[in-house]
Amino acid sequence: MGNTIRQREGASDTLVFFVRGEATCSACGTGIVNGGFITKERGRTLCLRCADLNRLSYLPKGDATLTRRASKHSGALALVVTRVYSKKRYKREGILVEPAAIEQARKECRADAAARDKRREEREREHAVRFARALRHRYPSCPKGVERKIARHACKTSSGRVGRTSGAKRLDEKAVRLAVLAHVRHHYTKYDKLIDEGMAKRAARSNVQDKVDDVLRRWGRKARPIK
Ligand SMILES: [Zn+2]
Image (cartoon, rainbow, N blue to C red; front, side, top):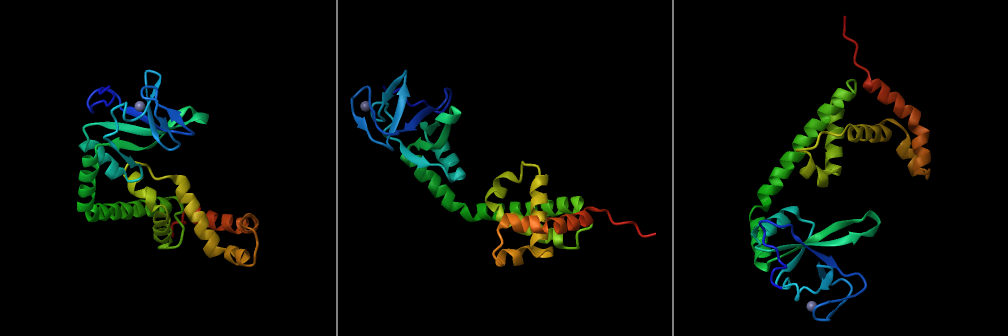
């Protein structure tokens, strides 16, 4: 049954499933406990040994660079997924690849970790600049420098996502609006005071809404040209 592992070129990758409850291998009769791996072949359930996948190691998802590099270095690859029954689709959990490929990938990741951090910081900075520009465009009368302050804060909070998406993704107008809204609420209204006094968030927000709207209206207006 050595053909179960698809080589990288050509056919789509083999799917391996986490066992929920328990399963039995159709070929050798081995019981597989909850959390173990199985694969399907022509409707049959196979343990990894019978599917000739047991020489591969599991690498959970989470580090995209490590996953990409390990996949690249491995001669064989299987995708580990769980089935999302409600949505009739698979959720990706990780990959099975050759142990040497994981080792090689880890080595490469260690070697250029600092350089990748630096590039990510650079992307975050660029994102903050774009964010501030979009903010100034949308709220042309906001006080000088406030757009940079809000942008820095917003980009720091979302830095986990920023690094990956900012390059390709267009700046989200809603993100800008929400960041401004939060800033105005905290700095131009008694919202924080109300919260300190024990008011529920929802009530406090509604309490200061008029004031927030007022500030946003002023910021959103174009300054009149001086005659
Ligand atoms: Zn088996």
